[in-house]
Image (cartoon, rainbow, N blue to C red; front, side):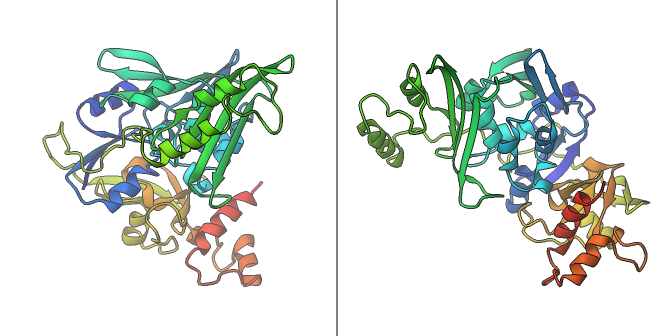
Length: 388
């Protein structure tokens, strides 16, 4: 059960809570869904929303992503066009507006597509640990995990040269689906042959892997549309697939934050309910919320705004979509105490009295409402897209 959500205003304060046993909460798109599904012991979270860890810097060819930078921030940044296809392959816009860079590093496979891209780019992590700040290669953290209580604050990598980075994701659906296999590659070609290559693969096992065998096969040869077979022919590939199927390839993954980890630090005390102020559909509203109260529950059960629906409670169906500070988000995965002071717009706020918005009227005119359960999601996303 979620008993507290801390809201530190600095990385050092967030690190102190983690050292005391709390779990980090980035966007919550995985952890909150897991908590909703799991009955266990008391859990404390520390939100990184206000810890000063969001932002993107790109200077002298080095890119720095704050740990709490959202995937939508990465997608929208014109300095990072090579990462946009990767980010757009992840979930839906209301999820990408919440999900964070650091969260994507530690979400279990077959998710973590951005992490595969960053591994191919030889990214390094700035980490706050017991002995202070340090820098770790992402490859090492992907293989060995992050010590409990440590906090990733930034991700750094060298921007790839034009036309040297490639990303491909095979999934059951074109959009909003976990990967069957994700491949990210940075390939440098000089004088017609591969001079340097980094190849990362996700989705096949419970952790990201560097495809070092494929790298060796590509190195020093021409890069053609058909590619090159590894030395020794296809037998090695078939044997590798057999080892994978038989479990001979390790399937351990990045550490998964257990939802049932006992709370510590506050000696099991529950955080008292808080007064939360929101600007809802242009009007300031106050409510009293427990740590476990989601934004969706606050809107429906406390404020009586029933337009956003509770559907999957996993962030997948989008029927709970609202606009948070102007961006569509899934309200079922957001502890309302973490968005104190934010502006929220629900479907009820789009109409001007009895006059529907243009998008709402278009839905009516086109008989597009169907059963009406998911209409708020579609209306919100299209309404925002139609704005100047």
